[in-house]
Length: 328
Image (tube, rainbow, N blue to C red; front, top):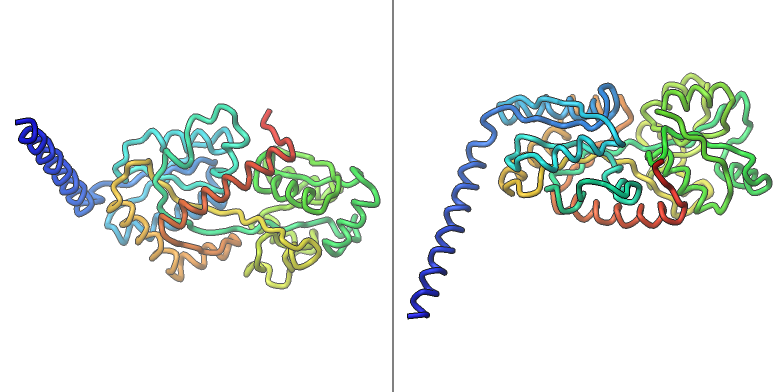
């Protein structure tokens, strides 16, 4: 009798799983049947916003729907990310984020979402290298080696600007100082624009700026590019060496953009979004737009993004603790 009951429960459980799987498959077959909301956790006009809008246009054509970009800025991207983490996991709300997704758990004690547990990875999208720049009218340094040797000769004499504490621009400087074993003063600003303005004005000595915003000043001769932060040279600045090859072996910081859905989103829906994103990244129009802002397309599978996020989160936790970086 007990055995018969056990078989009945097992049969019901199997039937429930089968129905759930069928429902999930049916949902994926009909997905999407209405517009998809793409949350950008920063203000309009930046590289992240541009990437979301460009990819959304291509994906909308592929999937016969609209991808509506909604900017929810604040708290270093945490407000927008948290809203997606709490959204219904049906594929109609997705998130584009930068590598702050991996850094914020170490920076914010009261983070109200878990980057690993609360999201379903979709795809890495692109990287936008940072570039170490200085003002040639006020600084005769021409290489990373010179930056390091001068800083060692005069500890805490030289300054580097950033777009704010915890940004990839700031972390690039912190990683540089840590690996080079030098002391430089960090000067945080509220955004890249004010930081660049003071670099051009001579109030600060160096900055690890995004290629997107630094390139026009480099081309105009107002800034000198010393090195890019990625492991390989940037297609946007092919004649500029990497930090690793020009004085600091092993240095690498790759500011990235990626797409996530809420945890629990059906794998079939994630697969559809992933396929559409990867196809979009291969389209000439999308590549041209990314190239115009210094971004390089990446792509990849959800599993690759999951592993990469875990690796990045662990790496930045170590640096943030070592350098005692805190959000006030």
